[in-house]
Structures are given as C-alpha cells and as structure tokens.
Image 1: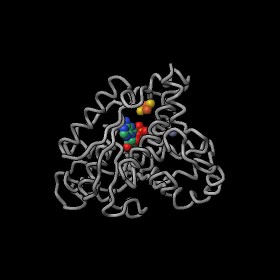
Image 2 (image 1 turned 90 degrees about the vertical axis):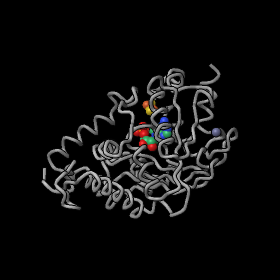
Image 3 (image 1 turned 90 degrees about the horizontal axis):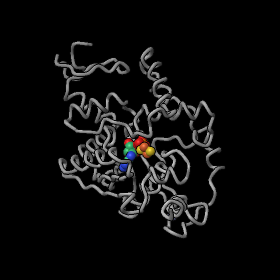
Image 4 (image 1 turned 60 degrees about the vertical axis):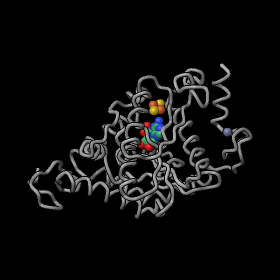
Length: 304
Ligand code: AMP
Ligand code: FES
Ligand code: ZN
C-alpha cells in the first residue's frame, strides 16, 4: 500500500483504491466518497438543489451510506423502508434502518407488505410459482413510485453501486437485451405518473461502500437476502471481480464506456417497447393495461 494519503499526505492510510491508484486516510477517504457522489449527481443532473429526495433504504451498506451522504451534502433526504416479510432477514434489515434514522434524526417512511397489503414475498412466490425476486422487484418498483408520489417527492434515490450496474450491464449484453440496454441509465427521467429515479452511487464500488460504513460507524446488515444466493447476478459480479483484479478500472470503463458510447444506440428499442399509459383502475398508478401489475399480484395472492 502506498504510504501516504493522496489528499493530505498523512501516513495513517486506511484504504488503497487500485483503480484510482491512490491511498487515503480515514477522513480523506470519507471526503473522497462524498465527492464521488457529488460528481455523479452533477454529471448526470440527478438532483436539483432544494428538492425533497426519497431514499429507498434496505438496511444494507449501500443505501444506508447513500442516505448518510445525501444528508451530509445538505439534501432534504427522507428514507423509505419496505418490509418484505422475508423472515429474519426483513426483521434485521428494518431494525438497522430504524437505528440509523434515529441516530441521524432523519425521517423514515415505512411500508410493510404484510400489514399494509396483506401478503409477504415468500407467499407471493409460492402462489405465482415464480422466483421470489420477481414479485419482490415488481412490489419495490410500484411502492417506491407510489410512496414518492403520495409524499410529494419528485425523485427516488436507490443504492445501486458500480458493481451492481456493471453486473446488470454484463447480463444485458450477454443476452443482447436491447430494451433493457436502452433503459440502463443512472437517471430515469420522470414520465407521466412516474417520478425520477436516480442512482448516485454509480461511481463507487461495493468494497468502497462497506469501508465507508465501517469508517463512519454505520451498522448495516451484512447478510444478503436469502433468495439472492446463487442467482445469476452474483455470478456476473464474481466474473467481473476476476477481471477487475487483473486490470483495475475495467468495471469502471465497461460501465461508463457503455454510457458514453453505446447507451444512446438502444433508445429506439426502448421507445418502441412502451405502450400508452393510463391510470390503474384500482390504485391510479400508471399502467399499460386496465389494472397495474402490482394490483393484479395483490388480487391473486391475497385471495388465497
Ligand atoms: P436490491 O434490489 O436488493 O439490489 O437493492 C437495490 C436498492 O433498492 C437498494 O440499494 C435500496 O436503495 C433499494 N432497496 C432494496 N430493498 C429495499 C427495501 N426493502 N426497502 C427500501 N429500499 C430497498
Ligand atoms: Fe427481494 Fe430478496 S430482496 S427477493
Ligand atoms: Zn394498481
């Protein structure tokens, strides 16, 4: 490890970042992480100063760190925690989120699937005979958006980091999924009935986010969702880690090179895929059918 901090030249360095060819002491590393978030927000016009942001917080390292950083950067950032009813995993993730909110005296909005909508993810998976992540992803997309609209937030921020985005990109490229490639942006602008979605951690990787939490005294849940074990996404991350280890910076150039030189080429594929949106007859959310996918899921699962 290089002996001195890149920013202040102190000798008590705590981390080496190979892709930046730099080492940092504790405070300069935390500054560096905040700067990466500030740059992502600026470069992609993610947030307008003064607007209220709803941060989707899972209790994991990325989203808790994101909330912490947005508060430090002066944004009016409230948290949104969605209780998925996934046993012990949901109990401890909710607890980590509440503890953080209390410590930072920040406002936390909570939605509990079992209490507020009458079902949990394991039941939805059993009834629909699909993997849990399918009902889970659908519920998250729907409830993040409706909670933001109901609470008067213009934007939802999620904790997706560089490893997440590069892994999703690799999966989309392996399948040449033009529709998804056209939508893989760190900012999805607001459209009729949908608030803006932003990913301010795209310039930071998993190891950096874990280090940020440890060095900032943020207690996060370390375990992954039990349903994620063995999924393709984790395999893509491992493959990219092997490449990154051999050539530091590969993940970064794969993802940001795509955004700069290829993403626009898929816009047409995405535009062609969108039907006209109308309000869901049951909940008012935008949908291409009469009833939105979330209300259909609730109808199917709650009747059982
Ligand atoms: P995941 O889909 O689990 O990879 O999580 C991606 C992002 O979605 C996280 O960084 C959070 O911003 C958000 N998220 C995931 N789970 C929850 C949850 N239960 N409640 C609120 N936000 C969540
Ligand atoms: Fe959704 Fe695991 S967090 S299925
Ligand atoms: Zn609906």
